[in-house]
Length: 106
Image 1 (tube, rainbow, N blue to C red):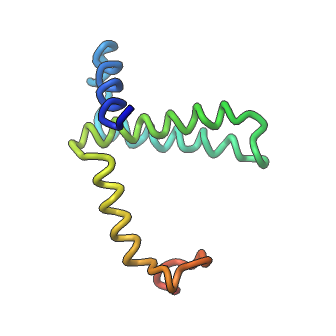
Image 2: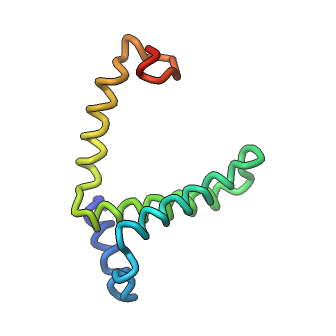
Image 3: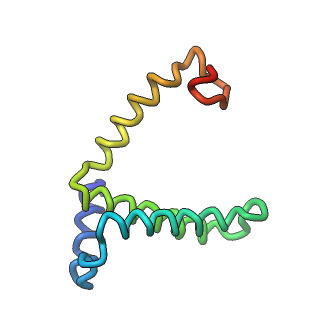
């Protein structure tokens, strides 16, 4: 299954329920943050006991990210590749390998 197939399936799911009216970019961005917090909660006191919950929360985050990209008319793979190119330039391998320092500290 391709990312386009997943996005098409998400569009159908949303359309069947008439939820597009609620899926403004602002609401979707809020939902990403909320779901990311729920994902983080799984790790609050250490490694989670139930990886199924982690998968579910991660799926929620990814779903809202894909819906937001779609609402903005952006190709999710292209925006990831574009940002990766910028990040590669900020963190060249020879300076960043094995280090967690911010780019301006390398």
